[in-house]
Length: 274
Image 1 (tube, rainbow, N blue to C red):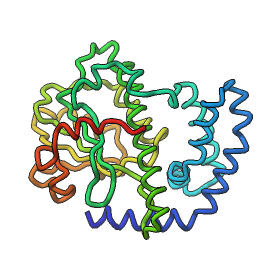
Image 2: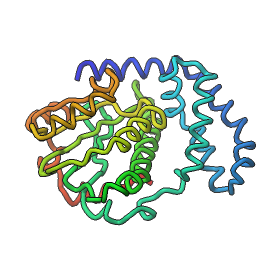
Image 3: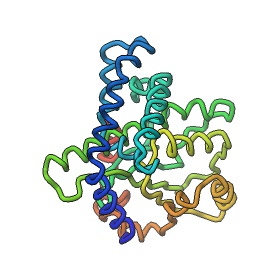
Image 4: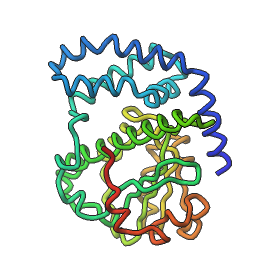
């Protein structure tokens, strides 16, 4: 926890130090807006969504951070990412456009924050839909993008509110993911899905996952973990922990923990960020 707290302090210092670089990157992106609108024949609504993304200072900071604050490199990667977003129609994704079975149970949802004020994303693996292996990746791909996009907007909006309040450490760069394996049974392991997940968290939404907390990890998952470790960087491995459920209160306030004092109906209704 002390290491994570220091990281937040350090990242806020960098966010402030490189404020002008962030502004320069934003202005460079906005100069490309007209050509992108023409390239993709965007209507007014979709053009506004691209502009909003270009104005997301937290996202711009993440790309600069990942690329040693090289403005040309970050600009090139962001333009590439914007084109990927448009081709995949990221700005049009909502839970209403996805299969209903992904939302019929408390499979994935955001709830409150940890003790360091980072948003918490909960994944209850037992509710993972039992898709056939032939469609598993394609069914989950847009859902994963939607969740990552919601997390991006959530951290952006929280940071903006904290800046308006004049808080000393306004930047909320990353989130905490709690993976609950209770009653999960056999977990499907798809190599293509794993590669896609790594690509999303490394390239499409870089530097957004701060910690991954895995609960109820048992011996039956050791094989999967050994496979996952082969495709993770050392930095990514260091973000993953396997605490006992009782130890979760060291990271998240007890009243915000599932099956603690948090109300399940309220949790289930806190699924979506507009």
